[in-house]
Length: 109
Image (cartoon, rainbow, N blue to C red):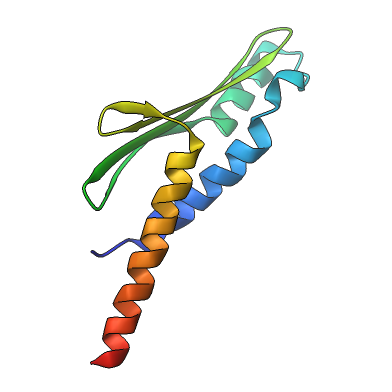
């Protein structure tokens, strides 16, 4: 299995964003409507669709601002079933394990 390094970097960046945004309800939103829309666009991430082994994973991160609150939603689907952030962390562990196996096999050859 060949895993793109760009995918791993995207997953790590999205995990960092998730860690930052999980307590977002207590953030103060921007006061101007245009700034709220820019904040939403800057912190939301489009659908990321990828496969690890036999698992098809889809992950989307959505940030919404009202006048009073900021809301964060992380939608993760594995093979059509809703999951939480632990599924993404598991994917990263699987990718790391397969990369180390590939390196070990290459060293033997």
